[in-house]
Amino acid sequence: MSFSEQEKIYTVVMRSGTSKGIYLNENDLPQDKALRDKVILSIFGSPDPRQIDGLGGADNLTSKLALVAVSSHPDADIDYTFGQVEIDKPYIHYSGLCGNISAGVAPYAIDEGLIKAVEPVTRVRVHSTNNNQIFITEVPVHNGKTKVIGDYAIDGVPGTSARINIDMSLTAGTVKGLLLPTGNAKDKVYIDGFGEIEISVIDVVNPSIFVKAADLGLRGDESPQEFNKMADKIEILEKIRAYVAEEILGFKDWSKAEVRDTNPFIGFVSPPKTYINHLTKEEVSADSVDFLSRILFMGGMHQTHPGSISCVVGTASVIPGTVVSEVASFKAMNKTVRIGHPAGIIEVEAAVENAEAGAKEPYKLTRAVYSRTVRRIMDGHAYVPKTILE
Image (cartoon, rainbow, N blue to C red; front, side):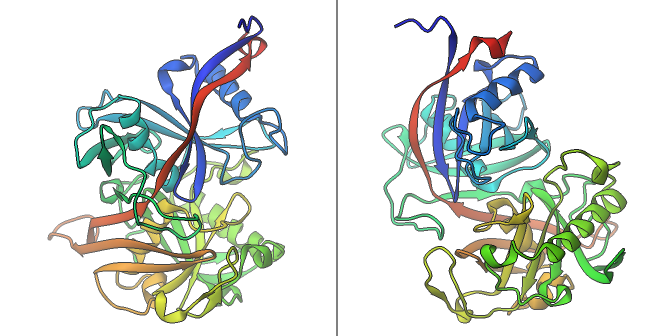
């Protein structure tokens, strides 16, 4: 069969964590980045509210991209570029990193033969080109391929699968080289139209800002459906995000950009309380979590919790004096942290230790591990009209 008017590009669709993404070998795409992005947008079907002419799922959690290639970095096995593909705009965000999609990169590389599988667990060093950092993924394998069947469950995904561990502890300091970009566990800032508010800025995987729900007049257990109607609260969080982006992280003219970067992330936290999982309608008891976290994502509340930001908020909870540690039900610098999110619970192993004398900041991150499950859904060819390539 001839497809004289279309080019075919080998494509893999994977459910990775609580997101779904399209995984592409970077070498299969045009080297020119502008043309490459036109091809990717065509594969997704963007811009279009339904992404009807492509593989995108018309949801921010299913409009995600992973570009993978054998790494030229001496300390890594593969290179990985994450892209958040806009649905109704011809734009791809490359500034941040998605922890859910990141979990699928090493399994993709193993199954595609980009790196050698080692049983029972293959340890893969992944170089994130988004932030020029390296993280470690431990992938269970069977008969040379990623193991799928297992008994590990994550909230927000039906059923169980094999457990994959991702250690992000080497990604601290993506912007200024500091775990605490301000040098403090907590700061007070003044926001026009709101007033003074306490924030904690933590930089692991992605720079992130946390505030207390109570300081915003929120309970902390709001569902996405409830919170997304609160335009005034979203506006305040966006103002805080803009302030930190420009005044603390040094992102020039960030708030004036036509399409704002996903970084920095922002979320609000609160003490443990019993709430209802907005997907399953089941009760999540207060004694099953250490604190509650809700993350703003692409203009609304994240339906679950970004894997990457789970590492950040988990790390923040074990650093004395942050707004997260102040609402957490424990006081420790090394713990498996149970984070209550809108669709259940995610656990993160987080540990910091006191830095050596003379260090630029008081704490050193030694562990930031979260676990996900991954499943390849399909592989084959996506077809792109040749007019896109002209």
